[in-house]
Length: 79
Image (tube, rainbow, N blue to C red; front, side, top):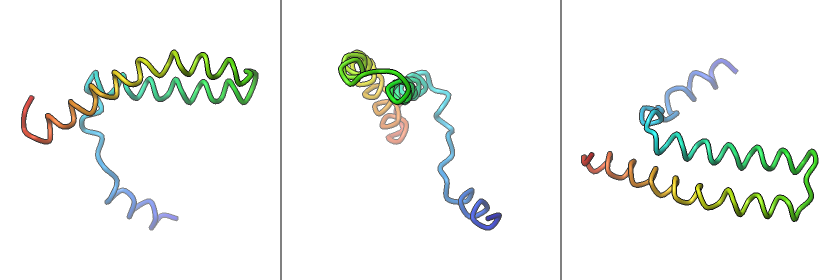
């Protein structure tokens, strides 16, 4: 197990751009979807999940586009 952890640490990407606001907001939106799925597992009905998921999809799309744009600009050397 220790060997696996050591090898994984060598190939795992470093989260150096995680502190960017656009990337962090996208991760928060993805976490909200995970929370919604957990809430569905515990209490919600399918119709409620679809309604709340549609509401969460809108900010997730825009924050995801901003995060990908931020990463692309960083890779191309723009900022």
